[in-house]
Image (tube, rainbow, N blue to C red; front, side, top):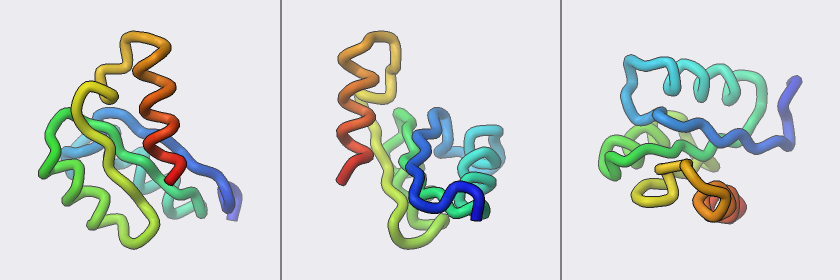
Length: 80
């Protein structure tokens, strides 16, 4: 598996019909653990559950990746 042992942070990934979701699925199919970022908490949680165990959702202000502190917060959120 090309991405085994790697973690990918994918933004805009809560919609199961969007590019972010397709990207997240591709990462998972290649062995990565995925942290999904989106503003819609329930949709992000559902999308992470759809991917299976080991994938997480991050929502709220951290997903407004407009500043270095927000990027750091998102990364730290994916580390657990």
